[in-house]
Image (cartoon, rainbow, N blue to C red; front, side, top):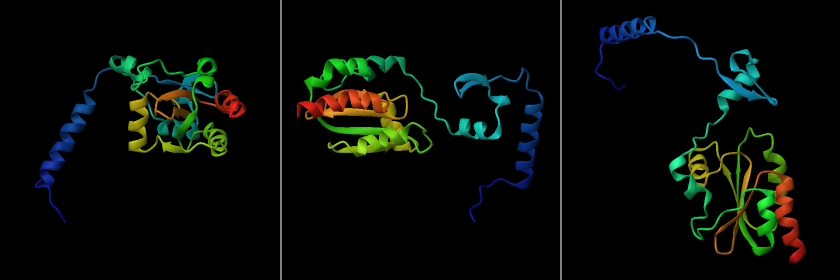
Amino acid sequence: METTGRTLEAIDAEIARTKEALANVKGSETEVYARIVGYYRSVRNWNKGKRDEYNHRKMFVYDNKNAAETVMDKKAAAPVAHTAEANENTKSAFTPARYELFARATCPNCPPVKEYMANVIIPGTMIDVDSEEGFAKASELGVFAAPTVIVYDANDCECARAHSVSELAAIFEPVAAVC
C-alpha cells in the first residue's frame, strides 16, 4: 500500500480547516433553471429521475474566438450547410462519400437517426459523444447537439449537417433520385 506521507493528525487538521472555511461562506444558494419536457423549471423541484438525467447531461462551451473557423469548412473555406434549408441549395452539388454520426447512449432522438443511417449505402462512423475522444471530436467540429450527422463528399469536405430523419431525407433522397 502506497503512503502519501500525511499523518492522521495532518488529515484531521485539514478537515477541521475545511469545515471552518465552509462555515464562513457568505452568499445565498443559486437557483438553477433548466429545460425539462418543453419548459424551464427550477432543477431543485425536479423529481429524482429527471435530476439524475440532468446530472448526465454534457454542457458544451461556445468558443467565440474560434466561431468563424468552426462554422467554415476548413478545407474549402466555404460556408457549411447546417440546416435542411441550406442543404436544399447544396444537395445536388455534391455526391456523399461518407458520414459521421454523433450520438449519445441516453439520447431519445438518436435511435431513429441511427436506423436511417444504417440503411444509407455510403460508409459511415458512429461517434459516441459520451466518450472523451468523441466529445473532443464533437467540440472540434462544432457539434452542439446529438444526434448530428455530418456528410462529407469525395474530397473529404463537409457538405451538409442534419439532426433528424426529415433533414437526412432532404439530403439523401434527392441524391438517390439523381443516381
